[in-house]
Image (tube, rainbow, N blue to C red; front, side, top):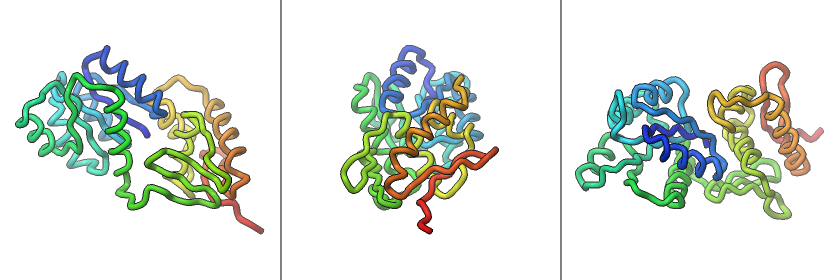
Length: 224
């Protein structure tokens, strides 16, 4: 998933980013409410993690604005405010989950996975294309002979292409989704990931087509 973290504590933000990246997510970090709100409005995300006590704009205001503009983005509040009233205010503002500091990274990752399952209001966790099945709950791609092991960046590539199946995804979008917006990554790094993933899925009736000058599209293999 592409996750936006809005948190002004640099040390905590770096720890959260590392943990989420280890889980295979791309993370964009903003350190104040104004920048975070603007980024979500223009760039979007699969999930937003928002602190409440932020410089320039309260996290509650960020959540309320997001709810009026992009109500398809799940929000996890991450804050030191731990009273019952604070939780109620946060949830009423539009948050989908509320987590207080200090916390365990394992629990944060579990809550992120739970919110990720709500993306797009999908009814089924397991979806099929060709001879491949993808379990969104377990983040596991499988073929008729068993699981296909994907390194985390190949898994992130699969997810963004699968979410946009039959639609062309620009290379820049893939870079942002896999590495985070503005990451200093050469385009050929994405090309290499695409090549590796393609080799693993083509035997099972699914391929990744390169559309010259536009990007890539995931689609079933057409049998002539």
